[in-house]
Length: 617
Image (tube, rainbow, N blue to C red):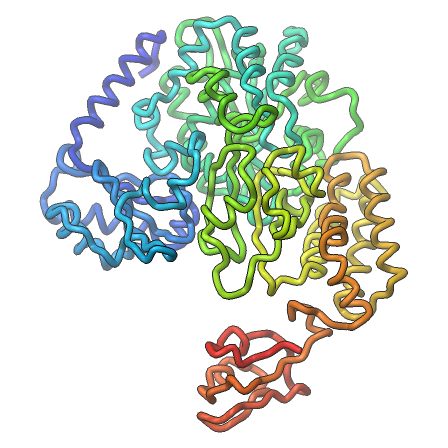
């Protein structure tokens, strides 16, 4: 059914709310990529089968919905229950029958499936009371995990497209001013004010046509914020782009998403089709004379496409290489037409700003960094997953309070923010507020929102080497200093990690980093040296140890370490069983020994030992 006007949209919402209110209980199964990998699809199917076998009416009494990411990826598959708000973790298909019998029908709690706070040792029933969720400010993600991403009616029940309806009653310049007053900065990494970018596009002549682009090409290792938004709440991005198009006079939209995100692509295609069928995309939207449509373009996963001019060339079917600016994309973008590019999270913020008002949005965060930011929290930390927090929160609050601190006994050593082009911030600087200026001063960047936590078992030389290996492979090669500079920096880091480095090379490494930073053309090349410069700044002593003492304190660089077995050994033979080289010998219940001529330093024995008997010397 195609909606003819705003009143029809409101009627559609009322019908969707009526259908929702008619269902007494709902089971929400997280079906984001992380939970699907843990078996969430089988869990959802088991619930549907069990309910059907019991003869329960799924349209009235009880329904099962698969949703987007709940955020607490480490605990998947996650199942929550409405209206009770109970959350179960690590749910398996075999437990479904008991859950339906005890929790759904009888209202009893299965204690073993609840989250247990590692500090208080208390079991927590309510989703909203688990510290991981309670300490966040979920605005963009508030509906992810609560609605079916493949249902536009579900999106309408949580206020979807009401911001669009409100926008259509405003003047375009009023919308742009509201976005500008909100202080929203682009969440893709550069942090350019969104309102200013929109104003520049609106001021371009309409004759040639204008493009809006959503950049969903999330290339940072360990980052999956945009993927989760597209998987869980794709309609919010579409609504944000519709508002942006009306405000700037754009007629064509493109969502550029990496082909490695099949679930995001699937849900986007469904959402776009549903929006077209309702008349929310296409010609004469809601009878206002406003026309706009969005096409989906799949990228091949090139890291350089995070740079907007390279992204434009990729959309045009050309080799994705950055180009000199000016002209800027807002002047000459896709097919030489004025183009504005914002990332997924930026677009998802637009309906929130319009619906709640710029003043309310600006109150969140800090004066020059308003709103929230989504981070993917991964690495050596207890609570891995997606977190949404107000700008200005400290790294310590994220890592210790929301993240739950380190997984094991090893202390947390550093955090890498901003992906491969970001920097490593040491634990002693965790009081640093997270905003664009503070992170830049610290030698890192906000980036798209990746946050990798590292503990004392992490070698910072090895980390710099890892990221430089990634960056040299992903360099488009257009700039000589980027192409050869990243390659040479990697070679020096490789020498240092093998004990072949010299102090002269260390000086050369720093000089090279500054040359690449100062002479490359695009933003990716200019930030590529950050992993090197930040580790040199904060962990210079580790470089010196590798060069002068030929020693890797973290026990990571294989050429600089030797494994041995200390007096803690109980002779349990766990290490013997996992050693593929037969390098460990010893009688049961007696201390074992390692033959260093056979040992390949894979670390399997150290991982298998429960008594900290395997030492790295």
